[in-house]
Length: 319
Image (cartoon, rainbow, N blue to C red):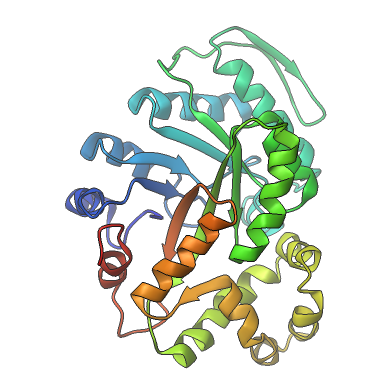
């Protein structure tokens, strides 16, 4: 399940216990414009020991390398053996427009941060020189009993291959079950037969009111798929023709036309909806195509379906 949950963080203890009681195994945080990625997980580490904790994702640009290593090591030390660190390039919107940093050479930045973290988490003194940054004589003052898994958020070939070669797996996002075969295949090939985790954030709204869900989902799809990295991703996946009218209208400033241009087929590909049973079956399709871990993101698209109704109806223990 994606966290933070609705409501203030201090109120989540009983809800996290409920998630574990319902059979959910993991919680995954993100970092964009809400809570930071680490605090919700730190609270959960103390409150509910049954849950695995992961970030999906922390941007590679927005913390300096040594500061990031400290955060990762601290979280791993707080929850030994059950913390997975997901890192990615994020987007030009978050990095440049919101944080005032240059969104340059994202592949190199993610690669270099991952390599630096591997060295730093060893506990040895690190002098690291790369295309992205230089760190001289840094040693972590905290060494986790168990190093965390390191996962890379990846869209296209280079980053997917990097996740297979140099990380413990990949985090994928905004794609259909069928698309998983394409991306997971690249990770697996780069891993050379070594097992890799494939974490998918899956957007879900268990509602049979298809028209309401589709209309609301178009806002989320347009918000993401007009970001350059996601536009390139879906063009690469083969949706260029389906999305060309939406991209054209968005660039011209006609938001209404852009929303109307998103075909139902694209919505149905990218957002799981329908009865709870149908949603669970659709989620299973992601696993059949190569996903090993799902991170459900409940979308509030139907006002008649509450967040917790959705959580309970989709739970592993649900009938």
